[in-house]
Image (tube, rainbow, N blue to C red; front, top):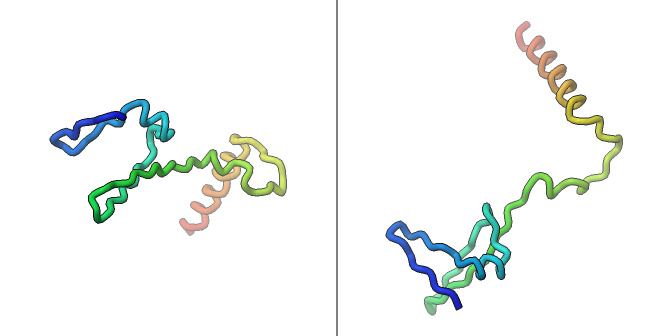
Length: 86
């Protein structure tokens, strides 16, 4: 069992053994569910990262690389800017 003290600002340090047991990492959110009998349940809500979605969709063509994508976006933005100035 681990104990933490609440600071004057309402902050609590989660003991390392609790963080390890619940797999709490930096950036995770904690959800507190309070019951009517004054007990509380803590749930860890993991943050999704964009890189977690890699491979989720099937590709129709090979990835040309970051530089090629940046060039294409730059050309598109340049054409769009020309069109809006006329």
